[in-house]
Amino acid sequence: MYNATLMNVKNLSVDSQTGVYFAGMPQLAYQGLSENWLLKECGHRHWMGLASLSGKRQPDFCDLNGNKSYAAFTAVRITSAKLHEVVENQRFSISSQVSKAGQARYYSSHQLISGSDVSHIEMLSTFVFRREAGNNQTVSRANFINPNISEPESEASELMQQVKIIRTEVWDKYLGVLRSSKSTLKEIEFSPCPNNDFNGANFLYFASFQAFIDRAEWAWFNAKDLPSISDRHMFFYGNINVGDKLKIRLCAINNNAKFITHWCEIYGNGLKIADVFTRKQRI
Image (cartoon, rainbow, N blue to C red):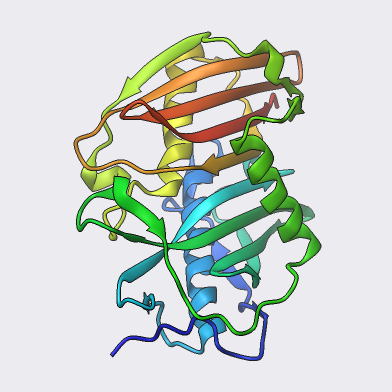
């Protein structure tokens, strides 16, 4: 028997227990806390928060038609990051809040606290299912009964609006990048590895998009000063299957003494599946 009523509880948001972590090799990268690890951890906390909202012990969802459904991220934002300040053997914490943001849509905010530094991570998701088994390009929004719909919080509303603006290409300036300056500055093609870039649900994992951009950036610039992430805003529109290739296109870049900021598009099978805006600080 499946449960087609999603989050049929009185609470419209849930605070997860603050997690305290020890910065060891799994959490660290070449330069401080691993952004990739952080995204995966916050994504897991988001997923478990959905279970808590629904009163479930574990996240296991099916829609009205019994289709196995998963939370697909439509946007992820990292802002004011100070990941380079996290060093080996340091303790840090992550606190999270997950809330409803509409019909089968959910928003989470996470605070990474390390000493006096606070980094912010926001995530917006919707539930999806595959119309055709095994084909990630047949993903559609799942249909649930959700009786406790209310107006989303202001932060969630702002992010939802931002997704719409970026996806429909009606923006003029974002993170200091002008849309009017768009051109194909550089391109690179990747063949994602199933054992590293896809998740247990057989989707190209959202955190892999960040890794692809960093790999492309390193191939393009081989920056000797290794700037540290300050802001990463990712907007997701689609997915690919195992064996498909990705093309990453550098559309615009601002480079000065303090920051390097760029906008990349990610394509799969000729379709744009993500926009990624990155700002890194030279330290």
